[in-house]
Length: 613
Image (cartoon, rainbow, N blue to C red; front, top):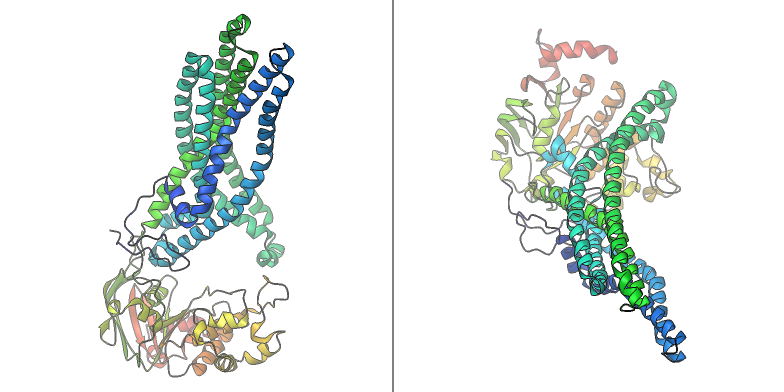
């Protein structure tokens, strides 16, 4: 069951709701949210929409008045100066249609930016608060991919779709009023035709949104292939292995699948749009035939006849592409809000946004797993089962084992990324789940195998998340311990040199330098518990062992857990834990484990020892 939580944003402003309930987002929220964050813009847009929606009817009447006035002047029924008012009315219309697009563009620039910023902040804040398991579950990961990347764009489209609908409604009603003033029953017939067109467009929009989901899945896949075939980081292997031809065929196949679905969608929209316009065109022709006798007998003026015909043809435009497009966007927006509601209702990690808090005088004395069992969300396989071990805070430990044995899972459980496990994890005899999450964040620092390379300055790469502690002396001390001080001194701007390729003049580091920089980030966190999940796996075994030894000497006195496949690196630990069959199968020093003739560790070490000889 989804917990009730405060919607207060971790970044930026919030939705200004006191307490977050399991809210189901309605279509009017597309307008309600912008109204709360930019009321003046919404008020101006409302006025603008009403004016624009009445312009077609105004044009029809203005032209009608102008034609009747000219004819009466020609017949001697009016003075020449009576033409000035109709001319002024047409002039007002011409001014309006010329300046209105520019006004709308100016309004939209500021409004779009503010709404986009607000929605992006809210979505980012929600993602930050999510239980970590959702990010590793395929179903919820697809939901997040559908909702988050285009959230701001979808809210902007939904917001404008509401105003487009209002404009269309006023436009149609005003034009129908002109038609029905001259011919009541044909106007009713046009209105009756609108209902099935409205319903067909709505159904089509819902169907197309479902198809669009499939297109987005295909698009993500072929976009990845496109990146592999074009981006720089894949260039060397592309050149050596010449796999572009094979990937190009797969790309073309996925692209064609997506294109077929999109073509099918467009054909349905076009068919729906044109069927409406053809029916409306027939009705307008019928109106013309009905009104011709009245025009011939003089009961209807030429100007009024032109007004009715003009209103009818304006309706053709409105009833064809405008009605179809508006209802299509409405149905798309409504379906998107179902996904958005599901995303916003995903369970959140308690205190996920709380800043790290260091417990005063905290020292890790003991870490213990008691019959811990765990499986990842959406799977049936136990990664850990009845896993029990005890670690002392004065020692360094290494976790070794085959791929998928559960080593990284143990690290994630210690770091608090998952709480949905069986059994108990005790820190100094206290259940780790009883610690506030802010304290758990301050308790452990983690460096994963796929550590991030931030394309910012050297300083920010080290202090990210701990900016308040920044001291030049402390950073330089860490760099010196990791043998990075000379490298940084040679950079153009020292600690403030940008890294990567994002900025002009940025410097690209070697793989080993990036790994040392990631270790510097871990050390800067100054956490009592350090967890290293194979951050040096890309290095050769000897280089990995050297890197771990360097870190051990630089970070002496702190509790550390290393995960590695290379047993030469594991030897620097005081004790080694062998993970097999979902639990700790062996534990002891390197020497102890090597004495077990049929031991798992000894067999693994014998396989690898030639790497180090």
